[in-house]
Image 1 (cartoon, rainbow, N blue to C red):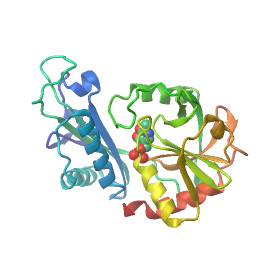
Image 2 (image 1 turned 135 degrees about the horizontal axis):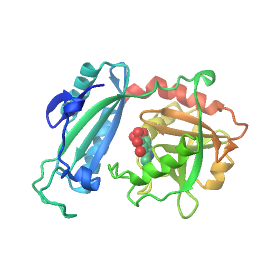
Image 3 (image 1 turned 135 degrees about the vertical axis):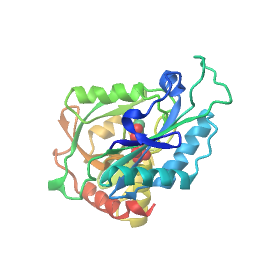
Length: 285
Ligand code: PLP
């Protein structure tokens, strides 16, 4: 994983340099995406690039995201770093200024960086071959515009670390009204009596590409009922199954929350159906 893309050039990772005056470094002023690729096959490139364009527009970085251009970067990184299971990380920051000022000038050239890193293989839809998660919950202390996939991730980092320190895999977050928002790097699903409920999208959650894709696949299949609505902490703690989703993990079953088992503490049957469907159809988007 040694060749990266920086501002138009493919170079060894240890030669990549950006200015300390880059607003990405000083302010976390940028947008990122992670696109999964399995043996050279990309998952959801178009929706990832659309979210990147939405984020750039929302924070006022004037860059038109060109599908073919980013696809070429993705394919080059795969060709130069070896295929397998890769996360392709795309990062656009507002660029390097000559001074540190919260207000930004109009004429900065964005810094564009991309690299590939290994991700775990996607879970096979087999209960015996899947490593489930145990997680904790925490009051969501991140900023109020979590729908933007901003590189200002300190709140997410702190929440993730909270679970990691206690030997867990993720932190599921809730707001002032004890409503589930998302996890520090995943979207959340609560399953009760065969119905999959996931929090309705708003500014407190990232519109996950995996979430969107999964819901579309489940709707097309029709065998599992879905509800997008407010999901409470009480419902999370009374669930038959809980899942998380993200691009580099697919759909992950959670078997413990705050040291207590989810239902009987085993991976659930609805997850098996959902992950089977997701694994079959995820390359269609
Ligand atoms: N929520 C947060 C806060 C995330 O950081 C991520 C992924 O990084 C997700 C949800 C899942 O989004 P996606 O499915 O697009 O990877």
